[in-house]
Image (cartoon, rainbow, N blue to C red; front, side, top):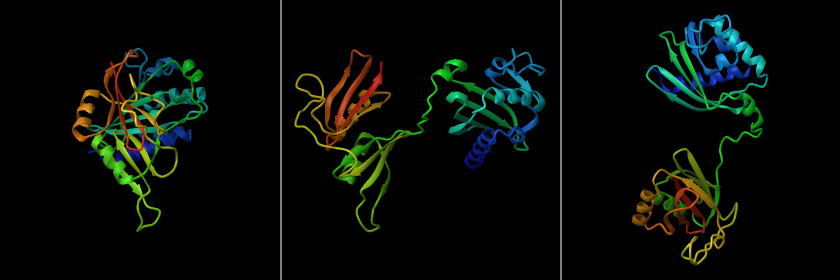
Length: 276
């Protein structure tokens, strides 16, 4: 049985082996007769001299064949570096989502044998066009983007977000016995930091609307945040039930989204949208 600890440990060691460009260290994770499937095998000519198994050059079997392919890949991409984004566990398998060469997003599934070695692996990529990926490569790689909201009261702000369906993640106190002055709320894999009396501006207008007739989207002094959800109308129903101020009801907009706005007591506006 694969445990979360085992999966995380494998992902760290596997990525570290690649990032040191030590091919022997990489191959140590695999059984001698393991099978590797990847659309890049044919693209990089990796099946030359190997056993493609009738898979149009997309599959290699055995360390010798795969090592030759990976050696060519390392030569082709001298700045190769993997960044692990997510690790998921299956029945006897591990799936790693990571940033691959040229910042291409990849997902790779690993199946293990009884000895704990990889018996089979299959790589999947968001794009196979390395020339385009190289042209559009982002040289500043951002792992997280977290807004920070200036708030008057941390506990009240956390409660407001909980009415929206968010959760409290953590809080920080400058003095152990003093009040918390910094914290975070989260939903899914997203977080928003909350800072009492600092790190940005705040201030709400007296207008009832942020958009449409009688509205002004520049009147509030707080931060606007675009939030994407699956069902705007379900969020709207929860907001009405919990007394969250809605400054723009769910509306089908001409730019192809259904959108609503809610306003935080300190003038911050969440622009909640779903794609149509």
